[in-house]
Length: 500
Image (cartoon, rainbow, N blue to C red; front, side):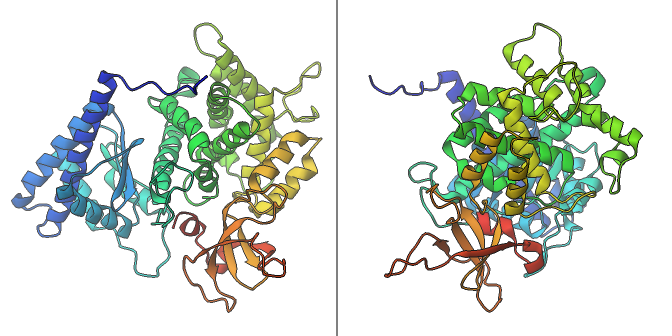
């Protein structure tokens, strides 16, 4: 029997895609022209009016078509929401200039959240011109985009997105299909990751008592795209989890847990439907935490008994908030169960307590392993982050007690002894970042790494890729990992190494 093929898109779907491309190209080009014109004229100069007006018109036409817009990329690789824009030759150069200018301002992209007018865009240009640029060799400021958005104001229909470095890796294919470069894959993964975090932030900002369990517009589509990504571009699912800088902890923790859970679920054979249920349940699991005062959630010191009780109430609140009107489908029941039991632990020693034992659902056990790993590897006000190999050792110590031992073992085999994104010291004295997890599960300590510093300690930037399974003529390994190290202590930019 021939393998099933995906049905061809309908005529209406093709027209919608074509229309999105047309409006996306027009908007991107008009923003490029606006910023180029602003290099010549003051934003208050009447010579700017045409560029401001056409930028507003292009933005509003696009917003009316798709609602919220997220434009991200690097130079010639630009994504609008989940689609790559195919730029005309006349637009390629100015758009590349625009993306480079945004990076100089330490910004990763542009977001539309409402209709705009001429004054909105005039204000946008003024704020950007006041933003300091990153000097060559300087240290990036992960909070630059937050300051720009604060200056624009909450009611501004145009916002900016954070930088996540992509770079121009020169490896074709890379698991993403014939002719697809790692840069294209990284750009698409980036777009989904940033959008997922923004939508989780929006979900948490809703009136939880009134809208609990209701997904913001677009979130379901993003979750579906992330599920597909674990089948087509699994490396970038794990690469994005290694990004630990900037932004509020809770929404980033939710999205990182989601990515890890999808990768682990895919590894143990869950189909797309089950993975989608897992994705929806994961973004609802900590809804109850939004009802806990931030001062308690972010408290650096020990919690009082009363504060601890509020924290331990959140699974019950999460379960209550996931209940929506209408019948309980299989998906909503799984969502409800994961919300209730994700802190009960495999040996029933967690919370909330029940009158009789309640075995955790498989999706809950997947969530618990992945949530614990991300929490352990993330620095918070109340706990320093562990190195990835230290976190895996801590998971192993909890296996059979708080965590499912089989799933802990599967996560270890998925990540390898030195997980993707870990900074390691090699036997040659070189410093490297784990770039690809080992393909041979019999050699979990033999990943592919990217060297970032030579034996003398001098930083070399983004260097070549080295497979630690390579041997010399006598059969010995050319390089091995001595130990993992803290990247901050050596000034290593992990995301530059992973995406550059």
